[in-house]
Image (cartoon, rainbow, N blue to C red; front, side):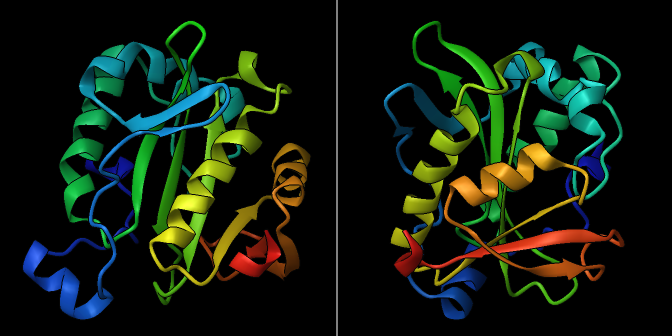
Length: 202
């Protein structure tokens, strides 16, 4: 299941991180809370809930980079094991987190920060929600919290990319205040709409 850890997700030993990337907090040391949501690390116990997200063809068809649909809960658990293992060694503040709805404690989606290929200099924000959680503002709410945390770690800008036909993701990027910077094919070997956000844009 290692292919579910994106090929561009460079990892480093702990003693390599500080000299290259300064004083970023290596880990999100406490969950983030919003009015309705909790953003926390994934665990292997989340396999069934995560499968409702990443096992959905409606979600998988939009993922960048391309990630095949997870076949079953057992396969999802293997994916989560790979994510959990990789998390401590991702270049900070990169990572993957579960999005939990506070009212019922259900995991309804995921968020991630990762370096964009091919130059691995720019951080990408992305979000996924299970289909029955769409249209309720959760992606925007969770992403705003993660953006604020990422900028508090010293990031100077964040990017989001979306397929041109993924109007839901494009609308979310705009609600987040992201600026459209053009269409590109340099990321993930796909033609994508690119958006950028800087601290002064918030």
